[in-house]
Length: 393
Image 1: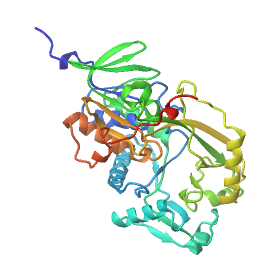
Image 2 (image 1 turned 120 degrees about the vertical axis):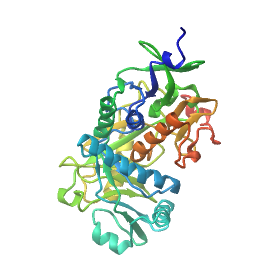
Image 3 (image 1 turned 45 degrees about the horizontal axis):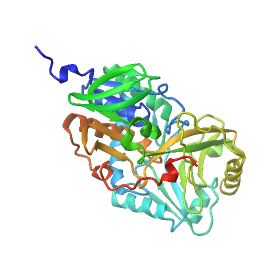
Image 4 (image 1 turned 90 degrees about the vertical axis):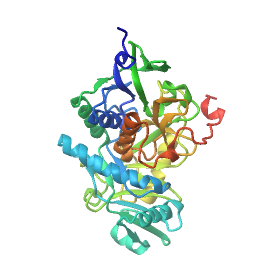
């Protein structure tokens, strides 16, 4: 008797990339009883992607897209669910502050998002900011929005925890395994690796900045960029602990984000001085932080964070993946419903990761999701990156 197509599958679904999005997708799929194979090019919880760096921001307010607020609220419940299932502390709600010129679009949007969703929040004028948060430079005309449901996640621990929980529920993880191709066939989707091939009913493509290395359709859609994070020593460390120094984003004339002390010695700050440089060879990204960038960091820190030693004592380099409209791609490929992409989340994706994983599980299980994510569909009108961004000079 011949085997049915289902019987020829090695598992129900393969998840390619076990970083923030992929690890959460594997967990949520395994919770629903799917047979899951997860593929990771590096080790689980590695330091070469967009999620690494000790801390990642969590907030339910949105500075760009209010339709993401419900997803953040769902993610909050799922983060707590993962903590409950594993006994690990992942999410720390120390509050979050967005500050800058009162008319800065990102600040205005965050306030509007909080009002529209009925979220608890507090609006601070420049005098209140200066009194409550003297760690920041505050000028006349500055304002802030304080979000009590904001804080930070421990990303490496979160990714490892989600992957381990998926394994406990029956998933199989292939780490240090590079995927060379994803190829639809009549009876499934083949995942080809350096050591062989396997067939699945569905494949979830979530390799972050390395999406174009896996799927040809992503080559002009998701652009890998290099991101540098840096750590600074406070003059008075007690002024930078989580109970008095919330997670922050500074917007307007400088774009920066940062976190309270989590290691007992330093705080992390990311500064967006220019567009992150494109990485054309994801196997060999540049790992040196040049003097010019360090000087830009130093000048910004000296100006906006006067209580810190202005030179970084540590830096890390990771790769992030962006689309041209700044929104991620989430959904089945237009011509291949068995391949689901979850890419381009860099910049604000980590906090949503469990909810995104649950959306992926919806799509695999039912072919649709009740969540409002149509605006993230891969077949939406999306400009390609210009050729000079995709090809080395």
